Length: 162
Image 1 (cartoon, one colour):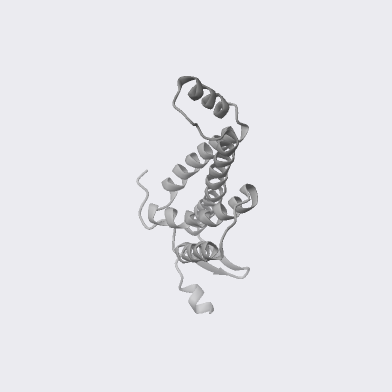
Image 2 (tube, rainbow, N blue to C red):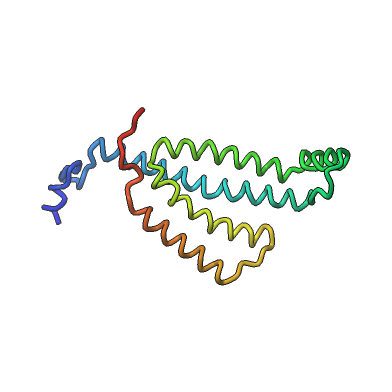
């Protein structure tokens, strides 16, 4: 084992144990940042959408395109706290998403963020009272297993351009 560790680039063997090189520390820090912001994406995106859905259920649907009805509908939408919270969550999600894309490959970010489908099912069930069928839970589990596979690859395989 010690021979294997000595042969690894970026690792230095000392009396105190194994010391990481600066490049490995930087890689670990940037990976941790990507994982943290992916977690924010997984929470904020579905939460924003659920809040929008909840707000729109409270407002109801528009029944005609009469100008008075449209104005009333828009005033209901503008006065909904749930809709505004949903918009805020989605705006923060979008900013976080752009940051993550600047740090990691799109081919990593998009599949890794797919675990949000699990969050969607949980939020739909607990916040909106939706019944989630066993077949739907099975589909969510398959997606999350795929995320585990992608998550075991490096976030960036290309050089940063900036």
